[in-house]
Amino acid sequence: MLSKIAISYPCRSPSVSDLNTRGTKTMKTFTKITFLAALGLMAPNAFAEITTEQAASLGGDEFTPIGAERAGNAAGTIPAWTGGLTELPAGYVVGEPLVDPFPDEQPLFTITAQNFEQYKENLSTGQIALLQRYPDTFRMPVYTSHRTAAYPETMYAAVKEDALTAKTTPDGNGLINVDSYVPFPFPKSGVEVIWNHVLRYRGGSVKRSYTQIPVQANGSFSPVVFEDQLTFAQYLGTSPPNRLFYYKQSIKAPARLEGDVLLVHENINQVTEPRAAWVYNAGQRRVRRAPDVAYDGPGNASDGLRTADDLDLYNGAPDRYEWKLLGKKELYIPYNSFRLSSKDLKYKDVVLAGHLNPNYLRYELHRVWVVEATLKEGARHIYAKRTFYVDEDTWQISIADLYDGRGELWRVKESHNNIHYQVRVPWYALETSHDLISGRHLPIGLGNELRGYQYNWDYKVQERDYTPA
Image (cartoon, rainbow, N blue to C red; front, side):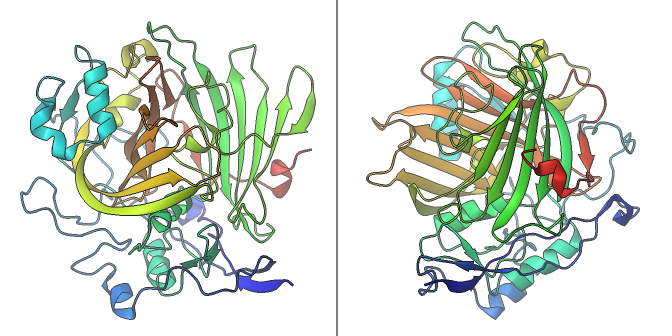
């Protein structure tokens, strides 16, 4: 028997005409959608709403509008959040590539394979493994921490309202009464933290170009240039219930791959309605369904260095894992990584054998939520365990330590966080995947050799742009 439940997702993003002189956006009210779902999902929910007192505290003296601790740490090495980076830095030209707002800062110190013991309380297992895997070449320059994350003001209001009603379904695979990009500002479970990451605000509808580079152990590489589009469902206004967003990715180079296209209709509850994906092969000139674009299916043009569900450090259905919230800790994570995107650099300047060039890396001390995902008994995935470190100011996963079926650390992923300050959108400058066994790695998001600014915010699309036809 079908039961009616309420499930919703972000609405249409603001238009460029909504930008005010400070570069912020206004946003329309989120709209709640109701649809029919089977499997007895009207059972009592696993996780309850927060109290009215907690919701009222969002944006107050204790918490930021999306649930991070507003105060700095006791040591003074993490500053208080004062609203993020909302003023345009000197030298920035609207429509041009981002400029580094901290161009003259120098590292406070550098973590290496020789001294990491004194910093290990603030390092992930994967970061320590990278230092030990490349003791002569990899290092982590640590800079002054800046809490630059900022979002549109009207998003903050929606988060406060949504916090009172948002729930997951009992199995954690779906959402109920969710109207904002941060449904769980005070998470009570690991899966709630992951839902915050999956739903986080990325501009509503955006088109971007970037380069993905599978790097061999000896440092040789051949870049693959992508163009992709991401549009949250309510932006179109006619999307079916349970739809989260639409995603289209096309390859622009090299010539042997040019013209191949991937299309994804991303659903919220993918147990009741699995992700739908199609690929267009330019050589065959045909479209076919792509059921392997999920879970541990191979990542597109990645040379086997990532899975379908570890793009963006994690995406897709959470149903194959048991999620455990381990709490918070202070961690050195890549942050304010403007230097990596500099148009003055070539890919060969940034990409080295084994890892990125430390001369252009920037690590800062920030608070992160720690979530451990353990593969359920009987479930299949090449990663038996995954540990995620999620930045409290953005709900973006910053570090992912990935373990194989033997329980051995296999891969380490890092996201090099940035803020697109002119539109108040925190996102990645790029993400990297390091294979500790083979010595290969995969940077995703580089744009040093691409012309102009890589992002087109409030990208205008129609529903037909996301059809298999």
